[in-house]
Length: 402
Image (cartoon, rainbow, N blue to C red; front, side):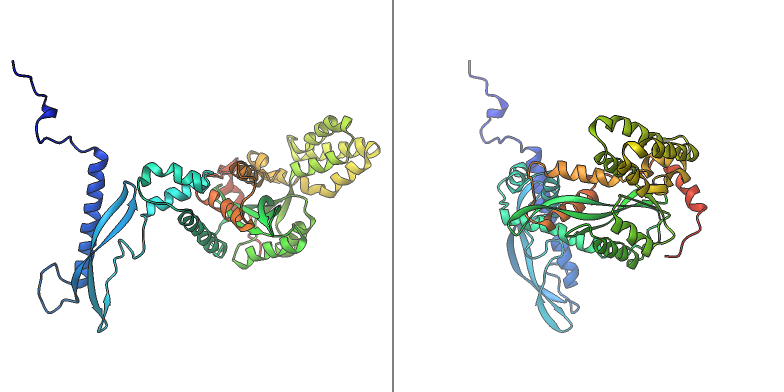
Protein backbone atom coordinates (compact mmCIF):
# COMPACT_ATOMS: atom_id res chain seq x y z
CA UNK A 1 0.00 0.00 0.00
CA UNK A 2 1.33 3.43 -0.90
CA UNK A 3 2.33 5.68 1.94
CA UNK A 4 -0.32 8.21 2.77
CA UNK A 5 0.99 11.74 2.31
CA UNK A 6 -0.02 14.30 4.85
CA UNK A 7 -1.56 17.48 3.57
CA UNK A 8 1.20 19.56 5.15
CA UNK A 9 3.80 17.52 3.24
CA UNK A 10 2.24 18.11 -0.18
CA UNK A 11 4.78 19.24 -2.75
CA UNK A 12 4.92 23.00 -3.21
CA UNK A 13 2.62 23.78 -0.30
CA UNK A 14 3.86 26.42 2.18
CA UNK A 15 2.91 26.76 5.80
CA UNK A 16 0.49 29.63 6.44
CA UNK A 17 2.09 32.85 7.61
CA UNK A 18 1.83 33.70 11.28
CA UNK A 19 -0.66 36.37 12.29
CA UNK A 20 2.17 38.72 13.30
CA UNK A 21 3.73 38.40 9.84
CA UNK A 22 0.42 39.17 8.13
CA UNK A 23 -0.09 42.25 10.29
CA UNK A 24 3.48 43.36 9.58
CA UNK A 25 2.89 43.18 5.82
CA UNK A 26 -0.42 45.00 6.05
CA UNK A 27 1.14 47.79 8.13
CA UNK A 28 3.78 48.31 5.43
CA UNK A 29 1.16 48.30 2.64
CA UNK A 30 -1.04 50.76 4.55
CA UNK A 31 1.83 53.22 5.15
CA UNK A 32 2.96 53.12 1.51
CA UNK A 33 -0.63 53.61 0.29
CA UNK A 34 -1.16 56.56 2.66
CA UNK A 35 2.03 58.26 1.45
CA UNK A 36 1.00 57.82 -2.19
CA UNK A 37 -2.38 59.40 -1.41
CA UNK A 38 -0.66 62.25 0.41
CA UNK A 39 1.55 62.88 -2.64
CA UNK A 40 -1.45 62.80 -5.00
CA UNK A 41 -3.06 65.59 -2.99
CA UNK A 42 0.14 67.61 -3.01
CA UNK A 43 0.49 67.25 -6.80
CA UNK A 44 -3.19 67.70 -7.53
CA UNK A 45 -3.07 64.62 -9.77
CA UNK A 46 -3.03 60.83 -9.55
CA UNK A 47 -0.25 58.75 -11.04
CA UNK A 48 -0.13 59.10 -14.88
CA UNK A 49 -2.90 61.71 -14.79
CA UNK A 50 -2.28 64.64 -17.13
CA UNK A 51 -3.86 68.10 -16.82
CA UNK A 52 -2.77 71.73 -16.62
CA UNK A 53 -3.49 72.09 -12.88
CA UNK A 54 -0.71 69.71 -11.86
CA UNK A 55 1.63 71.15 -9.25
CA UNK A 56 4.61 68.91 -9.97
CA UNK A 57 5.78 65.48 -11.06
CA UNK A 58 6.86 62.19 -9.53
CA UNK A 59 10.49 61.24 -10.09
CA UNK A 60 11.04 57.71 -8.87
CA UNK A 61 11.10 56.07 -5.47
CA UNK A 62 13.38 55.71 -2.45
CA UNK A 63 13.71 53.04 0.19
CA UNK A 64 13.38 53.70 3.91
CA UNK A 65 13.45 51.50 6.99
CA UNK A 66 11.00 52.59 9.67
CA UNK A 67 10.75 50.74 12.97
CA UNK A 68 7.18 50.32 14.13
CA UNK A 69 5.21 48.24 16.66
CA UNK A 70 5.59 45.16 14.43
CA UNK A 71 9.33 45.56 13.85
CA UNK A 72 11.42 47.19 11.09
CA UNK A 73 9.44 48.03 7.95
CA UNK A 74 11.23 48.16 4.57
CA UNK A 75 9.25 50.90 2.81
CA UNK A 76 9.34 51.97 -0.84
CA UNK A 77 8.23 55.57 -0.90
CA UNK A 78 7.65 57.92 -3.86
CA UNK A 79 9.78 60.94 -4.66
CA UNK A 80 8.47 64.06 -6.36
CA UNK A 81 9.14 67.70 -7.18
CA UNK A 82 6.36 70.10 -6.23
CA UNK A 83 6.04 73.68 -7.41
CA UNK A 84 4.96 76.23 -4.80
CA UNK A 85 4.89 80.01 -5.36
CA UNK A 86 6.60 79.45 -8.69
CA UNK A 87 9.56 77.60 -7.17
CA UNK A 88 10.12 73.85 -7.54
CA UNK A 89 11.19 71.97 -4.41
CA UNK A 90 11.57 68.39 -3.32
CA UNK A 91 8.41 67.04 -1.78
CA UNK A 92 8.55 65.65 1.75
CA UNK A 93 5.93 63.50 3.44
CA UNK A 94 4.34 64.47 6.73
CA UNK A 95 3.25 60.88 7.35
CA UNK A 96 6.85 59.64 7.21
CA UNK A 97 8.94 62.77 7.84
CA UNK A 98 12.49 63.03 6.59
CA UNK A 99 15.07 61.39 8.88
CA UNK A 100 12.42 59.62 10.95
CA UNK A 101 13.60 56.11 11.80
CA UNK A 102 11.06 55.06 14.43
CA UNK A 103 7.31 55.45 14.70
CA UNK A 104 5.92 57.44 17.61
CA UNK A 105 4.73 54.29 19.37
CA UNK A 106 8.29 52.97 19.57
CA UNK A 107 9.57 56.21 21.07
CA UNK A 108 6.73 56.14 23.57
CA UNK A 109 7.67 52.59 24.53
CA UNK A 110 11.29 53.69 25.10
CA UNK A 111 10.16 56.57 27.32
CA UNK A 112 7.71 54.38 29.27
CA UNK A 113 10.44 51.80 29.91
CA UNK A 114 12.82 54.54 31.06
CA UNK A 115 10.26 55.99 33.45
CA UNK A 116 9.59 52.52 34.82
CA UNK A 117 13.23 52.27 35.90
CA UNK A 118 15.12 51.00 32.87
CA UNK A 119 18.58 52.18 31.94
CA UNK A 120 19.87 52.12 28.36
CA UNK A 121 20.90 48.46 28.45
CA UNK A 122 17.61 47.35 30.03
CA UNK A 123 15.58 49.41 27.56
CA UNK A 124 17.23 47.74 24.59
CA UNK A 125 16.71 44.32 26.16
CA UNK A 126 13.08 44.95 27.08
CA UNK A 127 12.17 46.24 23.63
CA UNK A 128 14.06 43.63 21.64
CA UNK A 129 10.88 41.59 20.91
CA UNK A 130 9.34 44.78 19.53
CA UNK A 131 12.36 46.07 17.62
CA UNK A 132 13.45 42.66 16.30
CA UNK A 133 16.41 43.34 14.00
CA UNK A 134 16.13 47.13 14.18
CA UNK A 135 19.04 48.86 15.95
CA UNK A 136 18.56 50.97 19.05
CA UNK A 137 21.84 52.58 20.02
CA UNK A 138 22.72 54.30 23.28
CA UNK A 139 22.65 57.66 21.53
CA UNK A 140 19.20 56.92 20.10
CA UNK A 141 17.86 56.12 23.57
CA UNK A 142 19.44 59.32 24.91
CA UNK A 143 17.86 61.42 22.15
CA UNK A 144 14.43 59.91 22.77
CA UNK A 145 14.64 60.45 26.53
CA UNK A 146 15.91 64.01 25.95
CA UNK A 147 12.54 64.89 24.40
CA UNK A 148 11.13 64.82 27.94
CA UNK A 149 13.04 68.05 28.58
CA UNK A 150 11.00 69.84 25.91
CA UNK A 151 7.85 68.91 27.77
CA UNK A 152 9.25 70.22 31.05
CA UNK A 153 10.32 73.51 29.43
CA UNK A 154 6.86 74.13 27.98
CA UNK A 155 5.16 73.15 31.24
CA UNK A 156 7.39 75.40 33.34
CA UNK A 157 6.51 78.48 31.31
CA UNK A 158 2.77 77.94 30.97
CA UNK A 159 0.24 80.43 32.31
CA UNK A 160 -1.70 79.56 35.49
CA UNK A 161 -4.54 82.11 35.35
CA UNK A 162 -7.08 79.39 34.51
CA UNK A 163 -6.16 77.19 37.48
CA UNK A 164 -9.16 77.29 39.82
CA UNK A 165 -7.49 76.23 43.04
CA UNK A 166 -8.63 76.14 46.61
CA UNK A 167 -5.58 74.92 48.52
CA UNK A 168 -1.85 74.95 47.78
CA UNK A 169 0.82 72.61 49.19
CA UNK A 170 4.38 73.93 49.22
CA UNK A 171 7.43 71.90 50.22
CA UNK A 172 10.76 70.71 48.82
CA UNK A 173 11.64 67.30 47.36
CA UNK A 174 15.25 66.14 47.66
CA UNK A 175 16.80 64.59 44.53
CA UNK A 176 20.27 63.11 44.06
CA UNK A 177 22.26 63.99 40.97
CA UNK A 178 25.84 64.42 39.85
CA UNK A 179 27.29 67.90 39.83
CA UNK A 180 30.96 68.71 39.22
CA UNK A 181 31.76 65.00 39.39
CA UNK A 182 30.18 64.54 42.82
CA UNK A 183 26.85 63.09 43.89
CA UNK A 184 24.82 65.51 45.97
CA UNK A 185 21.25 65.90 47.14
CA UNK A 186 19.61 69.12 46.01
CA UNK A 187 16.15 70.48 46.83
CA UNK A 188 13.40 70.86 44.25
CA UNK A 189 10.82 73.44 45.34
CA UNK A 190 7.40 71.94 44.69
CA UNK A 191 3.84 73.26 44.47
CA UNK A 192 0.75 71.02 44.34
CA UNK A 193 -2.70 72.58 44.02
CA UNK A 194 -6.06 71.22 45.12
CA UNK A 195 -8.53 72.21 42.41
CA UNK A 196 -12.19 73.12 42.73
CA UNK A 197 -13.25 69.53 42.05
CA UNK A 198 -10.85 68.12 44.65
CA UNK A 199 -8.23 66.85 42.23
CA UNK A 200 -4.58 67.48 43.01
CA UNK A 201 -2.39 68.94 40.29
CA UNK A 202 1.37 69.45 40.20
CA UNK A 203 1.79 73.15 39.48
CA UNK A 204 5.51 73.88 39.58
CA UNK A 205 8.98 72.44 40.18
CA UNK A 206 12.17 74.42 40.54
CA UNK A 207 15.67 73.15 41.17
CA UNK A 208 17.62 75.37 43.56
CA UNK A 209 20.84 75.37 45.52
CA UNK A 210 19.15 75.57 48.92
CA UNK A 211 15.80 76.25 50.58
CA UNK A 212 16.67 79.86 51.25
CA UNK A 213 14.20 82.66 51.74
CA UNK A 214 15.22 84.18 48.41
CA UNK A 215 14.67 80.88 46.63
CA UNK A 216 11.17 80.50 48.04
CA UNK A 217 10.32 84.14 47.34
CA UNK A 218 11.36 83.76 43.72
CA UNK A 219 9.35 80.54 43.45
CA UNK A 220 6.14 82.01 44.89
CA UNK A 221 6.56 85.27 42.96
CA UNK A 222 6.85 83.27 39.73
CA UNK A 223 3.58 81.46 40.47
CA UNK A 224 1.85 84.81 40.90
CA UNK A 225 3.53 86.30 37.83
CA UNK A 226 2.16 83.42 35.73
CA UNK A 227 -1.34 84.32 36.86
CA UNK A 228 -1.96 81.98 39.79
CA UNK A 229 -4.59 83.47 42.08
CA UNK A 230 -4.14 83.51 45.84
CA UNK A 231 -5.10 80.15 47.38
CA UNK A 232 -7.62 79.97 50.18
CA UNK A 233 -5.15 77.94 52.25
CA UNK A 234 -1.43 77.16 51.94
CA UNK A 235 -0.08 74.03 53.66
CA UNK A 236 3.65 74.37 54.33
CA UNK A 237 6.52 73.01 56.41
CA UNK A 238 8.32 75.18 58.94
CA UNK A 239 10.71 76.95 56.54
CA UNK A 240 10.76 80.61 57.70
CA UNK A 241 11.73 81.87 54.25
CA UNK A 242 8.68 80.21 52.71
CA UNK A 243 6.39 81.61 55.41
CA UNK A 244 7.72 85.11 54.81
CA UNK A 245 7.37 84.75 51.04
CA UNK A 246 3.70 83.79 51.44
CA UNK A 247 3.02 86.79 53.67
CA UNK A 248 4.46 89.16 51.09
CA UNK A 249 2.90 87.62 48.00
CA UNK A 250 -0.53 86.49 49.27
CA UNK A 251 -1.08 88.20 52.65
CA UNK A 252 -4.73 87.11 52.91
CA UNK A 253 -4.03 83.40 52.41
CA UNK A 254 -4.52 81.26 55.51
CA UNK A 255 -1.56 79.06 56.47
CA UNK A 256 -1.51 75.55 57.91
CA UNK A 257 1.78 74.33 59.35
CA UNK A 258 2.54 70.66 58.68
CA UNK A 259 1.90 68.63 61.84
CA UNK A 260 4.39 65.94 60.81
CA UNK A 261 7.24 68.42 60.38
CA UNK A 262 6.41 70.07 63.70
CA UNK A 263 6.35 66.74 65.55
CA UNK A 264 9.81 65.94 64.18
CA UNK A 265 11.05 69.28 65.49
CA UNK A 266 9.57 68.59 68.93
CA UNK A 267 11.15 65.13 69.07
CA UNK A 268 14.60 66.53 68.39
CA UNK A 269 14.31 68.65 71.53
CA UNK A 270 13.07 65.92 73.89
CA UNK A 271 14.92 63.07 75.64
CA UNK A 272 14.41 59.60 74.19
CA UNK A 273 12.58 58.26 77.23
CA UNK A 274 9.90 60.94 76.80
CA UNK A 275 9.26 60.55 73.06
CA UNK A 276 6.27 58.22 73.30
CA UNK A 277 4.55 60.46 75.85
CA UNK A 278 5.37 63.55 73.77
CA UNK A 279 3.82 62.06 70.63
CA UNK A 280 0.69 61.09 72.51
CA UNK A 281 0.21 64.61 73.88
CA UNK A 282 0.89 66.20 70.47
CA UNK A 283 -1.57 63.86 68.77
CA UNK A 284 -4.24 65.01 71.22
CA UNK A 285 -3.85 68.47 69.65
CA UNK A 286 -3.89 67.61 65.94
CA UNK A 287 -6.34 64.70 66.19
CA UNK A 288 -8.82 66.49 68.43
CA UNK A 289 -12.51 66.15 67.60
CA UNK A 290 -13.02 69.91 67.36
CA UNK A 291 -11.18 73.22 67.26
CA UNK A 292 -12.05 73.90 70.93
CA UNK A 293 -10.73 70.49 71.95
CA UNK A 294 -7.57 71.11 69.93
CA UNK A 295 -6.94 74.44 71.63
CA UNK A 296 -7.54 72.89 75.06
CA UNK A 297 -5.05 70.11 74.27
CA UNK A 298 -2.56 72.74 73.06
CA UNK A 299 -2.79 74.62 76.38
CA UNK A 300 -2.48 71.38 78.34
CA UNK A 301 0.65 70.52 76.35
CA UNK A 302 2.22 73.87 77.20
CA UNK A 303 1.52 73.49 80.93
CA UNK A 304 2.79 69.93 81.12
CA UNK A 305 6.02 70.34 79.17
CA UNK A 306 6.99 73.90 80.16
CA UNK A 307 9.14 72.74 83.06
CA UNK A 308 10.15 69.32 81.75
CA UNK A 309 11.35 70.45 78.28
CA UNK A 310 11.16 74.22 77.76
CA UNK A 311 12.69 73.83 74.28
CA UNK A 312 9.81 71.60 73.24
CA UNK A 313 7.27 74.21 74.29
CA UNK A 314 9.14 77.00 72.51
CA UNK A 315 9.14 74.92 69.34
CA UNK A 316 5.40 74.27 69.65
CA UNK A 317 4.72 77.96 70.19
CA UNK A 318 6.75 78.79 67.09
CA UNK A 319 4.06 77.00 65.07
CA UNK A 320 1.34 78.58 67.18
CA UNK A 321 -2.21 78.85 65.91
CA UNK A 322 -1.10 77.87 62.39
CA UNK A 323 -0.96 74.28 63.61
CA UNK A 324 -4.74 74.47 64.12
CA UNK A 325 -5.87 76.26 60.95
CA UNK A 326 -7.25 73.07 59.40
CA UNK A 327 -10.02 73.01 62.03
CA UNK A 328 -11.75 75.90 60.20
CA UNK A 329 -12.29 73.70 57.13
CA UNK A 330 -14.65 70.72 56.64
CA UNK A 331 -13.90 67.84 58.98
CA UNK A 332 -13.74 65.39 56.08
CA UNK A 333 -10.66 67.26 54.84
CA UNK A 334 -8.75 67.56 58.13
CA UNK A 335 -6.61 64.48 57.52
CA UNK A 336 -5.30 65.88 54.23
CA UNK A 337 -4.93 69.49 55.30
CA UNK A 338 -2.88 69.10 58.47
CA UNK A 339 0.27 67.79 56.69
CA UNK A 340 2.27 68.21 53.49
CA UNK A 341 2.15 64.43 52.99
CA UNK A 342 1.13 64.81 49.35
CA UNK A 343 4.59 66.20 48.56
CA UNK A 344 6.28 63.75 50.92
CA UNK A 345 4.68 60.99 48.87
CA UNK A 346 6.13 62.45 45.68
CA UNK A 347 9.50 62.27 47.38
CA UNK A 348 9.01 58.63 48.41
CA UNK A 349 7.80 57.54 44.97
CA UNK A 350 10.72 59.28 43.28
CA UNK A 351 13.24 57.63 45.60
CA UNK A 352 11.66 54.24 44.94
CA UNK A 353 12.08 54.82 41.20
CA UNK A 354 15.79 55.72 41.42
CA UNK A 355 16.87 53.45 44.28
CA UNK A 356 18.57 51.00 41.90
CA UNK A 357 20.58 53.85 40.38
CA UNK A 358 21.52 55.73 43.53
CA UNK A 359 21.82 58.99 41.61
CA UNK A 360 21.10 60.40 38.17
CA UNK A 361 23.68 61.70 35.68
CA UNK A 362 22.83 65.35 36.30
CA UNK A 363 20.62 67.45 38.55
CA UNK A 364 18.54 68.43 35.51
CA UNK A 365 17.97 64.75 34.71
CA UNK A 366 16.54 64.26 38.20
CA UNK A 367 14.16 67.18 37.74
CA UNK A 368 13.04 65.96 34.31
CA UNK A 369 12.42 62.47 35.66
CA UNK A 370 10.36 63.70 38.62
CA UNK A 371 8.22 65.85 36.31
CA UNK A 372 7.74 63.06 33.78
CA UNK A 373 6.74 60.49 36.41
CA UNK A 374 3.90 62.72 37.58
CA UNK A 375 2.74 63.94 34.16
CA UNK A 376 2.79 60.42 32.69
CA UNK A 377 0.65 59.14 35.56
CA UNK A 378 3.26 56.73 36.91
CA UNK A 379 3.04 58.77 40.11
CA UNK A 380 -0.64 59.45 40.69
CA UNK A 381 -2.09 62.28 42.76
CA UNK A 382 -5.48 61.20 44.09
CA UNK A 383 -8.30 63.53 45.04
CA UNK A 384 -8.30 65.22 48.42
CA UNK A 385 -10.20 63.53 51.23
CA UNK A 386 -13.64 65.13 51.43
CA UNK A 387 -13.44 66.42 47.86
CA UNK A 388 -17.25 66.64 47.74
CA UNK A 389 -16.98 69.53 50.20
CA UNK A 390 -14.79 71.67 47.90
CA UNK A 391 -17.71 73.33 46.14
CA UNK A 392 -19.16 74.43 49.49
CA UNK A 393 -15.81 75.76 50.70
CA UNK A 394 -15.13 77.75 47.55
CA UNK A 395 -18.67 79.10 47.20
CA UNK A 396 -18.36 80.83 50.57
CA UNK A 397 -14.97 82.41 49.99
CA UNK A 398 -14.40 86.02 49.18
CA UNK A 399 -11.77 85.85 46.47
CA UNK A 400 -8.72 87.66 47.82
CA UNK A 401 -6.88 90.10 45.62
CA UNK A 402 -4.24 88.26 43.62
